Length: 437
Image 1: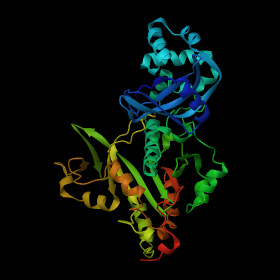
Image 2: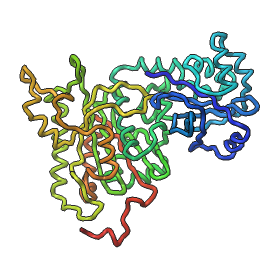
Image 3: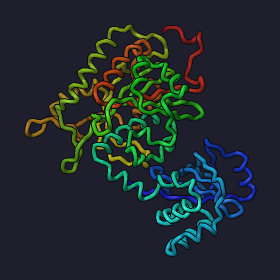
Image 4: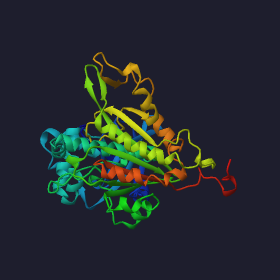
């Protein structure tokens, strides 16, 4: 798991005033000297005022170029300290081996090394106990606790996280918002969604209202374990996690994505490849996958009886909503917001490629790998098709998919249900243009 690090931000007097007036929970951006930092590693920002005191803590990410040798620093989730902490008080608590580097950054700003960051958050946590819960998410102790979780639990959390990140990518939501996952030592991990700082209770009326647009929403509501909402200027993504079993007993995760604009469902099921020699391989027949495809076929039989949707928004390249994502076994790293590499295969293509003679091994077994799959969608290609509503059920068919959702929940798999509602009308036709083709 990559270690988090920190950034010290110091404003000029003019920019300090702008920051004081305009920063909010949604974010603030500042042009800073160029620095290197992976967006898959948490960046915790400490804002130091003109009075040499830490006043705010937030999450940051390295943005676009902002001029010659300048880089945009994007900040979200600001927490304002009840009492600012003077930098000289912080330095008094920094170990001698780290004091020089911490002092330099507190004076001029910039990126902290991981060790200097550890020393800084230790000092800030002691001086301001209110920040301890926030900063503890980024300490070595947290990483060790997560690494010691049973492998079955880590795998379940990894699939839930992957489904959530995929939904956010399709909806165009910044995945940097998914940071700071942790669990209580008293209760243990419950789900990936429940461990996020932004999680909301399922009784939240806003969540219930969003969920009501789904077919079969009443049954889903009875199985919701946790829920949250992500939003940007154009989209609102409501995510609920429905399941009936504890983490260690779950058999996998399905992403059920609903594009409210096009009344379009997509369902993605994840399957793990294992390392064999110098390549990753998915071996089959797989009894679990065989049973899951039987359930998909029952749904497809019902969908085939529905008349074509002749509206412009009803057009699809394919009305089969089912996809497999076959990828190397996902390692649970809650601080990595990148999508795992893998192959998205439409169910119809899986039927054909799984019978292709090129997948038969020397001993008669079947194996799928990057070398013999022939064609697949990568992350960016799949997100592009999915976000535009080009693939998936049409509006008439979508009303029948409550059965698929219900059976996913009852099968022992987790349903990560994401509802994307656009906040503008850029894709909608006016009534006169919505006529049948």
